Amino acid sequence: MQRFEAGSRPTRTAPAEWFTGTVTQDPIVEAEAPARLRAASVTFQPGARTNWHTHPLGQTLYVVSGKGRAQTWGGPMIELGVGDTIWIPPGEKHWHGAAPDEAMTHIAMHEALDGSHIDWLEPVTDKQYAG
Ligand code: MN
Image (tube, rainbow, N blue to C red):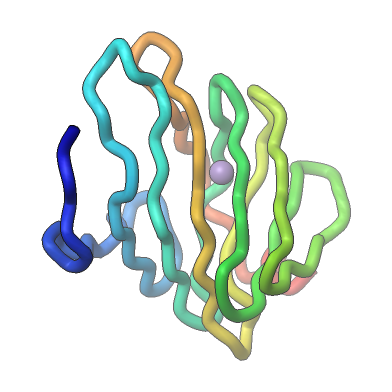
């Protein structure tokens, strides 16, 4: 058993090549294989969002603060509020992020397949983000 005391692991700034706006990540689960689960608390400042992407084994998002948005490719924009849970099936192209006027924090949980838990695609344009 290993304890990670609150605040003992540094907050990371999410890479600009995969995100629009200011996004920070706090690790929760980063266990070595054969463990597959990855989990992180991710905070998006207003207007910030992921690129389009997919997860080989799907992803669950649980919103813990603020207001957000998420969308599947070709689908409607979904508004996210505190306590909402989103399930994204394996291989489904999507994005998630904050509302334009409010930050959002979610817990992101996903399993790795052959060491990969996410496949990054193109940015979400301002027009796409506006709906
Ligand atoms: Mn995702």
